[in-house]
Image (tube, rainbow, N blue to C red; front, side):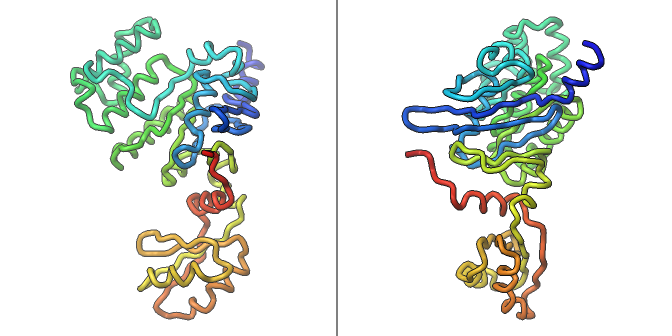
Length: 316
């Protein structure tokens, strides 16, 4: 590949799909979905369970054929060249899908044989080392905790050196320490040039992503750089700390000009789309010396709740 082609490839999105649609019976589980994922990005699919995230991932990597739409993944047509896409994608499913009656090493060797990998033994040794699995290589997969199963699944996904990782709810049921270590690994892979598309319903994980697409009931609500999502929506937010927050929350929820009231530990976050109306609504309560009010940046959780207000369930 010459320098001009290499530069062009680096600038082109790894995933570029438009109008992706999937129908089961009379229900559109994915409805006219567009997505562009830059090369080397960690791209978050954020949305509630049943929102169509898994179905969209499977269409992108060629495991499901859409009823409508077109586009490319890794430069290949998602409809006509799905077989080529699969060879360069690592897909980690929601549920642990390796063999629990095999050891960690046996699982990786089995996956290596399925891919027909050259230097399989060396690749398995490297995979065990890279994700800290060497000392547990002979442990049965079925005896592993959720965090260690997660490491094994990710190791199997990376065994064939894919250019794109599709991770479907990878941290569900995993303890906070394992989640943090997992995300450190994800960012290390991104730094090495691997593009990662990860679905999650954990709002606190969204900040780990370079870009975010909010999806609900088969429709994309908004997408863009994670740092810009809340600003694009235009909500204003205040934080209040003090005593009797339960009673205060009830009063705030009944006050015109306030759209959201959410408890965050020892504080409440109060949001609304009209800054002037919000400030007028809270003005009488700000005079209370027992309460401490602070204007804050709107978070991703407040933004998502705002977007979900007018979205209709597509189950029927």
